[in-house]
Image 1 (cartoon, rainbow, N blue to C red):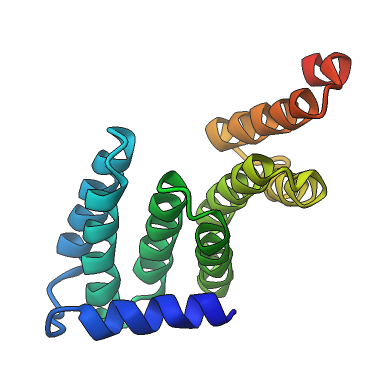
Image 2: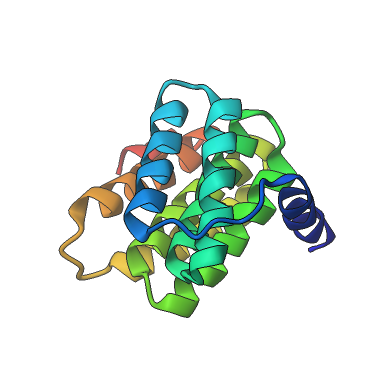
Length: 167
């Protein structure tokens, strides 16, 4: 938790003066961060998500704050900062839960499982992906459910259990 507090402190310390903007503008900035992540440009993504985090705080919008944290966590993970990335994504789960955003919670749990997998923390990875699958049980959101199942298969493969991975 100290790493998260330090992250938030640094983000606030080095941010430009807070400007509220609009929710639409904040969402646009988050989408820009997503675009950078998709092109494997984590530093640029981090900068966009940081702007969105600052704006979401000024707007008092916890959902957009969670989205910003989720993006920052992914950017940190892409930069090889696994522990800090995991802590930040875990914090996004907390905020998604506070606002009842099951979609964001499930996406965050999947990414958290990926990070744990990369670190070789298979027990934590299985626990996290299972928690994500429980969220989507009976849901109409097949896309995220399939990605969670793929992550589960990847975990079994990482552990050398190829038969279970194929199931």
